[in-house]
Length: 353
Image (cartoon, rainbow, N blue to C red; front, top):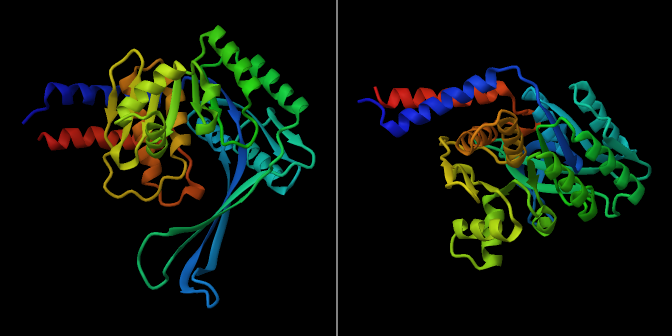
């Protein structure tokens, strides 16, 4: 039995994506957002504490990794793009470690401001399994260290001034907002206005409390839970209705919804809805899903790909994250995406033999 016309078209689109991923064309991506450190503590949780009904974690290993906007920057670099990252860290051990890690991987840190006496955000995840059982780790606790004070006005203004200047010659702008103070109302307005003037597409991963800053943004990223929350807020009956209302309210061009095992859906102002189903059976974790999707969309925009190709590429990037054994050492790369899309092409061919 041969492929249907729809399957043949999908096969051709996926094969075309592999060709784009193998090309060596460079692209400059401007990225602004919160920079933080992720720490992972692994161990066994065999017993409960004698004084409270909480597990006792016996640590076996720990790793540190760059997170949030810094993780996106590293993903852009591994995909063969040049990231121009703008953010802030404190003059503490975590901040200096982030800068050293990025520089060691060839990611430019010229746009990261080191602010005296500021605390660098560190998110520590404690993960464990039972030593006697063969099973995946589970998250026991997340412990956050972060700064409550806003970024000093002088530093914020200098950061956005430099970012605006750097938009010349870029293929896309990514805004990664984790609510740590880098993304501001005034700064966003200036940056988005300049991007619009240059015809530069904007990708935003906003906090739900910061949607007012995203007026007119081209690509908005939501995880399924975020869209579900917004569905309730706007009184929509379905996620699709909520996306349509939000697109109209904020004048967005596209809403990209990442739904884990349900795949990736892109709702658009001027295009039909596109869905890319997840082909995985065993989902291991979801940390870094939005970061990977932002990187994939930036790559797609740098190659002028259409919405369907963008959905397929973002879905493949999400599958790489969902299938990862250990997020603390995982970096999305072109090789990962080529392999994942190659599996999808192979499955289409095999299923029709």
